[in-house]
Amino acid sequence: MYLTQSLHRELQQNPSKVATIFGDRVRTVAESVDRIARLGGALRALGVQPGDRVAYLGLNSDRYYEYLFAVPWIGAVVNPVNIRWSPAEIGYSLLDSGTRVLLVDDAFAKLLPALQDQFDGLHTVIFTGEGETPPGTLRYENLVAAHEPVEDTHTGGDALFGIFYTGGTTGHPKGVMISHNNLVTSGLGSLATGYVVSPGGRVLHAAPMFHMADIAIWTMGNLACSTHVIIPAFSTTATLHAIADHRVTDMLLVPTMIQMLVDDPAARDFDLTSVEHFLYGASPISESLLEHGRKIFPTAGFTQVYGMTELSPVTTLLSPADHDNPALRRSAGRAVPHAEVRIIDENDNEVPRGTVGEIVARGDHVMLGYWNKPEATAEAVRGGWMHTGDGGYMNDDGYVFIVDRIKDMIVTGGENVYSAEVENALAKHPAVSACAVIGVPDERWGERVHAVMVIKPGQHASEDDLREHCRTLIAGYKVPRSVEFVDALPMSGAGKILKRELRQPHWEGRVAAVS
Image 1 (tube, one colour):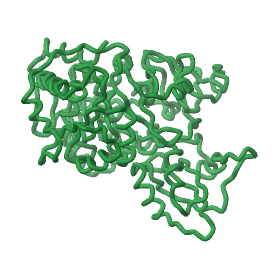
Image 2 (cartoon, rainbow, N blue to C red):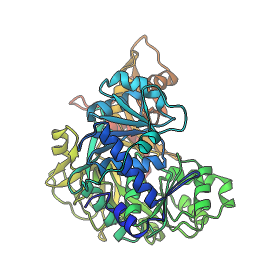
Image 3 (cartoon, helix red, strand yellow):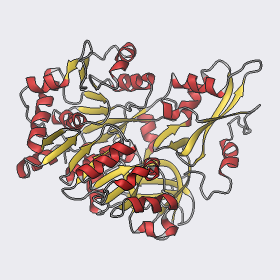
Image 4 (cartoon, rainbow, N blue to C red):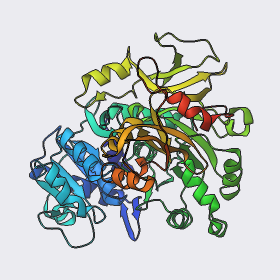
């Protein structure tokens, strides 16, 4: 299986069908395939060889769609960059992956000097924006126009499709290696449920296209012969207009975004009845939000998706019908056709139903491993099972309920934040003696990043001081939203910080210690 296969099928069967809609730009399948093949030719002329990494730092666009196809078209590897990261984090991912070429748009071109200072191997930059071409960069449209189309290499199977960087427990991001088979398996298995994408429909890209969640619906849409409706970034106004103007049938958001939509009074003024499948992930949806969401999207079936980047990413689904059962709404659903899911103890033995343990999954959607991190790969994937780090239980009908996180991770607004990354940043402040970062419940974000701080005697640091310090080192969504100052942190006899004691007052009275 190879990801560009859907292009050849569509070109054969529906060449004049609309492939992408981005603002005023509407391109057919035939036009898109020609541009993809020309972009592939341009990249090859720039020296990109099979297996080389090509990164994209930018907002959603039809050019992002072309990039995702053109890179594997010539057998190279995509490296979509997290646009929310700080320059230091972005630079690390480019250096760690050995990126050969970077595509960048108007919104992020200003970061180029800082990135090139960190990574002097970044010699080739392609500007995908609409403004003036920055010095030392190549203009995207000029490259597409100047190069002849090249033949597809039909790279696929277990060949590496992309490196997707995610947070790390050591404080550095890890590059998750995803193959063509991984993504196609996840896409086909998800489509087989009938809950995700309408055949020949219109998929909305409002979630960021660098994110594995959006890559998943991009893959499903390609397999289902969808038209891709793309907006630069999520906003309630842009999303509502896109749905109504282009009759979007399928979309994926996180509950925080759904909340923003239902809270917008203008939502009642739009015809949103085209939506058939409304996917969401990162956390369960509250009964109140589901009720309001169903009123605004009366024709949509709501489906919760659970997984992770390492699982390409779909592993369980909670179907629209399951949402009608109040006892299941806190569940993450049941295993999809391509996945096997178990709950295990610390010795990797499956536990009885109803017993809390670690959620593990196996199947052809499990990642190839972490880039240049064989030890971390061996720890995460044991006996073919991906160890998610999520604690949960399974009921007698196979529904999975997540109750805790074994890994020290916080999910806030749909983004994973590893405590170690934030703690490493805080520890660099000269006034900090010790710190611990935990997730605490938050009505808007599901969980928020909360820092518990011990300040050195005679030193001073305010909440604002610590936040500003962190912003220079880590992405904004990782910066603590709340800070608590204490004289000492609770410690075990072995000298380990007892984070459960720190979490307990915040989660007391709740069914689960995660949202």
